[in-house]
Length: 560
Ligand SMILES: NC(=O)C1=CN([C@@H]2O[C@H](COP(=O)(O)OP(=O)(O)OC[C@H]3O[C@@H](n4cnc5c(N)ncnc54)[C@H](OP(=O)(O)O)[C@@H]3O)[C@@H](O)[C@H]2O)[C@H](O)CC1
Ligand SMILES: [K+]
Picture 1 (cartoon, rainbow, N blue to C red):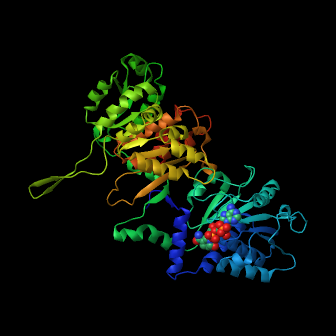
Picture 2 (tube, protein in one colour):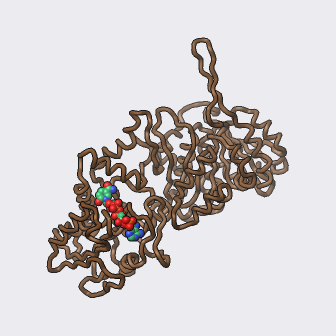
Picture 3 (cartoon, helix red, strand yellow):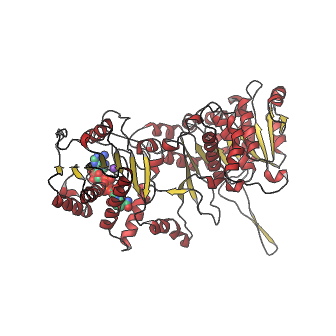
């Protein structure tokens, strides 16, 4: 079984669809019919007897799906009004066939509003959107390539304001299915959202990122018979040793390797948390508790000598305390090779972080694997640096951003950066600026992938939806994962997680998991999932201190 659900970019969906058609197994017309039928089935499950339906049909194949839906609804007795926002002669052959079939079957009760001028009056009682039981948005799907015209947005706006359910075909029109950004011409209209979105074969990245979860409403993923083609897309090239990396949604299955079988405490690793000055130790203590709750065998918190008493007073006895005043103290601590995970940032203080980061950087090496052929020893250089698994968060990121390129050069494949949006923009200013633009869009996924590539490290961008990507050597025998998305927005929202100290706990959770020996990308994804799961389990009223204490319950629920 796969860990997590694959989701697709629009380019992948197009490639899968055309591979299916090229194989001769299915025609575009058949796919369009299945897509339309899937939308009608999902619609009727929720609104069993719609008397009137209003179908907005766009200029591409999304509109083609709309014509199929109009026909199928009329077949079962619904009165249908269609508004066609394109030109017959510019339709694809498949959409044109369905356009014509619908035109031919129009009956007395149905209305046909082709090519409306901008000022078309839709308020005549005969075809008012407001008098429809359901409004189907088949204006734009995966082919949307610019903001939604404001006149088109008006139709959605009318439907939402009239309280009509909006059923989006593949996507709420205006939603970019690669970035999850919602773009319309003219003024923002935050109230526009679908009640139900029916997408095909797999959710798309844009359903899960940024505004996607909120704008899409309930998301149904309908099987239109392309399962084998999806598998062939990912696994087929594996036969040529080039498996295609996937983008996946986190899932509880990720936490399975954390099950504790018997073993010495060192089998579960030794995490080192770097803490800051007296009076500022709360964040590092939260991280230490979280690491311990994730099953790290040992957790050491290193702080200035004059902060030891304070930390001792408010940490579990299981956490060991060590003095760390000078960078050299860190060098001495790191001489203990049993320390196999480090957390630097929460409550560390920017100045202190700036002096400790170079020590962490010098701890990393260019790895030289050794191979024996007979009795001859060969070493070779690998094109990456490796070091002890390290989480850099908060003050370490701010200090790192000020050090610029020197900071990035000190990172290695086992480093995990866990910035929020502001910290991300500090470390990668150009990407941060591009993320702010509505159009043209750079998705958070693209930004994180680019950042991981530059840093040659794992990047975890925190937000309502967390995006994680790595630039790491592929592990033999494992299906490559390019990025993980941990959705905690829309229906999956965990609003209580936006609380002071919550990020410190996440850094500690990931450090604890690293100490347990999970590879960095898996550790980051698992940590993001556990963090949201703990918050969800606790519910309203959550404060960051509750999160580590909730983890045992999450593990119990998983049967670990
Ligand atoms: N994925 C599948 O297996 C199936 C998908 N189907 C459906 O098809 C759409 C994708 O169809 P496509 O034709 O590629 O794209 P769209 O219909 O989404 O849109 C393309 C047309 O829209 C114009 N366009 C794009 N953006 C805008 C905009 N902001 N405003 C106005 N017009 C826009 C674009 O025009 P150009 O001027 O750019 O040429 C195109 O005319 C998918 O989402 C599914 O619903 C199949 O039916 C079944 C299988
Ligand atoms: K649509």
